Image 1 (cartoon, rainbow, N blue to C red):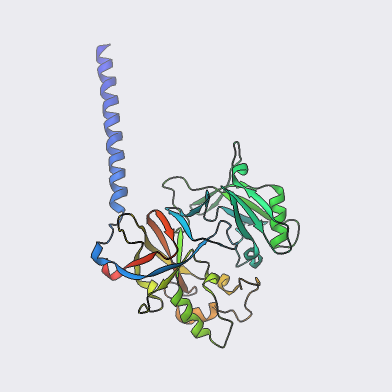
Image 2 (cartoon, helix red, strand yellow; image 1 turned 120 degrees about the vertical axis):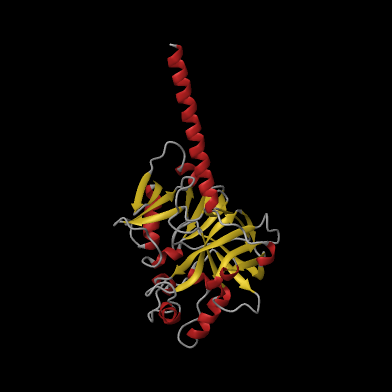
Length: 326
């Protein structure tokens, strides 16, 4: 009997040791992959933060903010997270403004913690209360695309009808869901923050001069717009490796380059009247000189991963570390 107890004790001890080593190795592996912040002498002043756009409705109009919380999952405000509301059509495809331009007419307004009022032209507003929709018990619907999984909770029938009328101008056709936050450590389907460089958009408008009405940064649906210093050239974002928002390196919001933002027909949609440009601009022009990473889709703007979380404010000084400096 005593021998059995000793064997059992040894088994438990070995199991605990192996488990501990496994956890330690996983932790070490994970943290070993985390890139090191550039040293203080490797940052250069880039400019200031001019615009903060928060998009609680995928494909909808943004909410302009003066400050916002920045997390590993993107921007957060009033208990809401980026693209927390997403619509699907009858074919089961995600609704985005490139295919459904009138999604841009859906304007969210924050009216409480996790509560939005949705507005659209010629439509009575409707309240979407995430507190109510996510109260237990709620049914989760999973939508899978390759290895990415979206966990969704469907909104009410009147939300679906309202959105269908606003976007399709008929009673049915779209369904609105709350997209739940990913589990800790779960891979995101896209980097959480997209940054635009205003000087690059200005250069694009110079090239478009006399052909079409000038495009606005808003047409590219970036979360953050950088107003760069006068000596910074257009498309300087092609060389950004790190961006720091604020003076204090240890406590500032820091982001790291992930990928270029490859552009589709969405940029041809006018954000004021929700119609596509008949001349296929500005996408046609971008394809003439911005096919950097893809033979068909031009680059404009960059996706960044959040390295240090914190609060972003309009007017924050922005510092850059370039790819050739890391």
